[in-house]
Length: 62
Image (cartoon, rainbow, N blue to C red; front, side):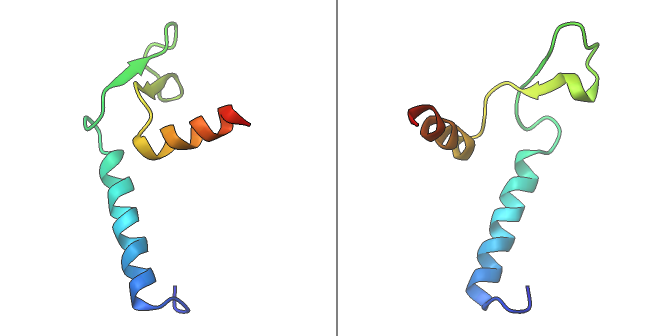
């Protein structure tokens, strides 16, 4: 990150903080996939975050 200007560094840090908060345990509802007994690989967020929801919509249109 040494080659980035201060504004770009601040934006990257802000986005990283937003992502970190989004994945804190208990922040978003989760669903357990049947038959997985709640193993890490069998647990998913109930709804995608807004940023990824837009990405999925664009992929569906193509």
